Image: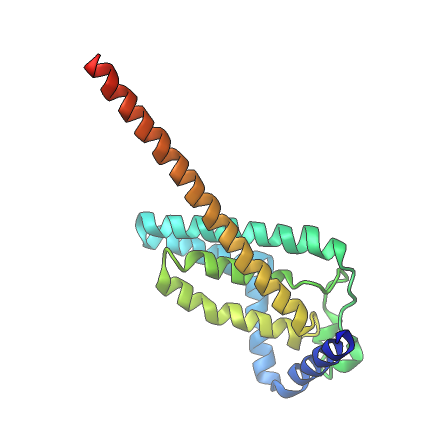
Amino acid sequence: MIKELQELDRRLTQRAADRIPPAAGDLLSALEASAQHSKLWCGTALLLATAQGRQGRRAAAAGMAALAVAQLLSNAVCKQLADRPRPPRHWFAHDKANDRPDSSSFPSGHTAAAVAFTTAIAPGSPLAGAMCSLPAGLVAVERVHSGAHYPSDVLAGAVIGVISAGLVHGAARAVRGRLELLMHRGRASGACGRLG
């Protein structure tokens, strides 16, 4: 089973390298450059926070928190545990495979960040979430096309992104619930004090 999955990973990686036209590959590279160091997602968060009021600020905060969790899980935890080599350079006719990190291929931190941010902002700003889904998906495609990752690395990054967004939203709900409980208790004790 493992050998079959590895073979599928190899075939999909080589197809992405061979079948994407050079002009489309250049556009993907430009998009990846804008997502490098989370610039694209930080810019989107800033735009959300300034253009959509309180709801936009909440969505932006959720997006940036999820992105941070995803980066932590993918780069500081998973990459340290899984020392997977990048796809072989000779699989790629283009020279983009020469410009890639030496760190573990598994998982894709770019994809984890993109999916985490997009998934986390969607509940608070569905339009922004929908608009971010296209560049997030293209970043994932670019990571395979450029030779930086196998498709399974990208899939794992996407799963980490979704989990990160879920953790952030779950933590926010828990904090809000706790604050509401404390406020309710405070109001109740104040009312009892006035009655006494």
